Length: 333
Image (cartoon, rainbow, N blue to C red; front, side):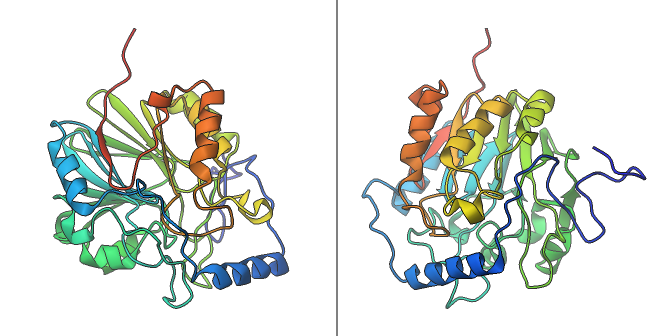
């Protein structure tokens, strides 16, 4: 959709906004402040973690190295993945640091370590970032990435300056629906329903996005952070179907605050259905407490919603942190 003068709808005089029809339930300041106080009180109480939730680092590397050549995926925790596709190894939304915020003392702290430290990652070709929030764009991770001056970085509009300051040279900014080729790999930025902010004064000055990544006859959708809305049906009509949909299932309570920028597990499955994702890979849970739902509730709700939506369990994955799997195109009839 275009505005008068031909400017895209999501562009504003001061930055960016969500697609038409997106949920808009902005709470008042008092509601937000009470929520923040509750979260700060609970920050020092990490939850008990099931024994099978995460692999140890030796098992992480062994599993990745044992995969056959070709497309593969490794969940590093939260929304961070290693994706091998089109002969490239891509790092998605790398939050591999300890805290997810600007002030260490008051910021959410991860209760499960990242599957790999930045120094332990296999050789990378590119980094793809969905938006500038601290649990998706981690300064500590960026500083510690080996050979960052050699990496390509693909980011939404207006976020490139951040990476150039850290020594990245090949920085590509994309608007929604813009594409960029890295060899045989095509990366397209797609609309998402969220927001951006890293300081008190830069709300929505940089764009947020999901991504379609395509090569070797295989199509992967990475949502980044998003709420649910009618835009996903449009994405499915224009870009679908996808072989894999990486969708966010956590950070949704209280709904009075979170409904306009985070999806519930049921909405994450609906996103998968709308875009034509044949297999789902849940993310954005089980790593750091950002909201008030029980930290291990999301996978149970996701599994039930996926079954109700017609996904077989083998097509609605639940990865352990550090688990890797080969990716295969959907069988053709």
